[in-house]
Length: 298
Image 1 (cartoon, helix red, strand yellow):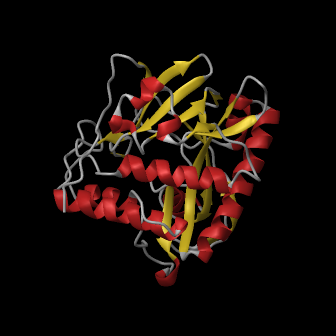
Image 2 (tube, one colour; image 1 turned 90 degrees about the vertical axis):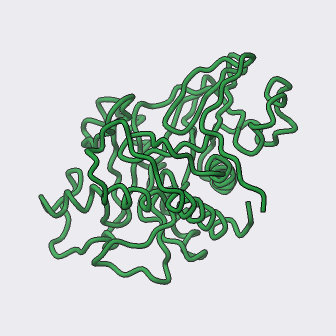
């Protein structure tokens, strides 16, 4: 079988780079259109790792496209063109962009991440152990690691340009985005999470938590942007073997975090390289999430 090549970074003399994020490179196409390119970079603990995950950008793009279409009855999104052969000519010159790029509306993105948690894991589990609450939400005593929460929680976070994102209270959230937008973002986030979680369960996947990003477009209205319900932005568990009281095997980035936790690393740059077997196993988990949720092969 031919080796799968990776795309760690993109750079083009005929495309203007607007932003290089942890995973995505964003290029200007016109005054109201940008090209979102998902590379194979992977980050953990807010640090970009030096080891790419082959096909990761294609998986993130394909799964986001699936969800954008599936969620259209609930929320509008920024997607304009996903078919590479229908992209502007300046994009089609670069074959490495096929399968990992989307032409999207330029939007004013809210400087927050809209996190929804359905289960008690990650920083939420740590908060609960310490204080019996999660981001200001008081919870019943006696919950176990990975317990299903009595109701899904909206726990917004800041979007740090450098360093770690930080959980914020809903009062802080309102101060950042305004009362009207805060209510709309909270309602949309919980509604999307509920609908997607119900669907995913029919495919044998538990969506434990996820984060959404939203923006405003010039014609008005809040739309879903960036990626949605991918293994980079969500915790996906196998519903068949789910058992609260311990960490769950996952089809997402948690596998990489757990490996990194075994190392003597202070979670500050530079991040350590991943062994090839860890990178390959991560790719397979991402592919399995895509297969399970879409019923298709990449």
